[in-house]
Image 1 (cartoon, rainbow, N blue to C red):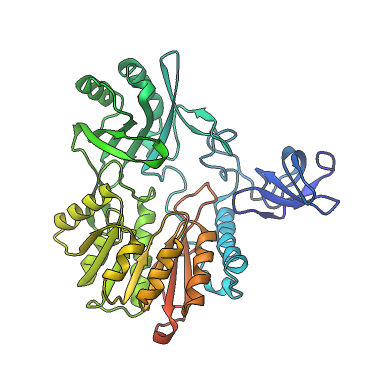
Image 2: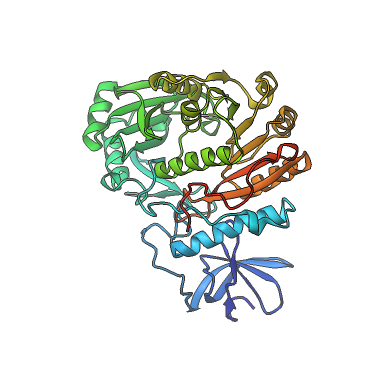
Length: 458
């Protein structure tokens, strides 16, 4: 029984737990288990076919087990795999993509289609952005993250994933907020920090409901805590999770954050999305461009960037292709995208709207680049895309299961999955980004061999 019998951890589930078997044949999902561990398990949930548990004692540690670097590892949900060696993390990230395509997508040849993981250039301090939750007790502010598997608040003094010179910023900002912003603390929901190693820009954003604010005092005190190039207050309307932005106030500095991508500057407003791993974003761009070349998309072909954001793919595409259309629904990102095109003297047709609705008006497409949310494509978007029938689709995904589901839909509608390149943007977590190339079978002139995608390999 769990707790008394040693269990060998044989694999990792996608969401991070170690997987073994009890003597009675039931599967045991073990928090913090590493493949190769022999452990005694304390049962947390007991079910007919499986149990969930935590490690009571490690009998024999796995050779892939390492000492967690962060003091908050046991409580914070941000980096749940930091007790696993990085090479082993990449093995199981690769496996998660293969297994999702095989199990959910029904793609028997998934193993041969999924390339080795393109590793992150940094495994710590790689994030250009962190989002900090706020807790206020007796008018004293603490910043932190959410606990593993719950919405419980975990106060932190720092974060090792932010650039080194800002790793202690949460503690400094919390002190400054306690000193100067007590009147707005009840209305303050989140603090975001963005830091670029390429441009050296640092942006601090306060996400809050409307309330009176001594802007000059707040800007001065917070800038003494963290030297910024931009400080904003993002005023939200309604529930925070909906990110319904009513207004962005510039408290100090430029009012935007700059990042370098593909040799060009991007300017990003506080609410606009950008990949949190900047070198990883460059690898994504290089992989997308290489897949378009592999599919023999020419410079005069019409290329669409759907879910375009502030220009992560649109800007590099517009530098290489003469006919680029970009579709984005989020107002802040649409404005940033237009500004980034203008600043870089590039041309693309920008459509503010929903991809599913706007696709039919784009005209004939040679290629579509899609970077949908974690939930993947909606049925309406899938139907619109297969109806548009571009010769190739390059799908950027942050969730193997929704990629696999959508891959099945593309295959059932006449596309062939040529290859998938997993790219690790999130070391110390189970998350994995993937870029998949689909080609319409009736136009299969694409080179389906082992053509170099220019993405770094393991």
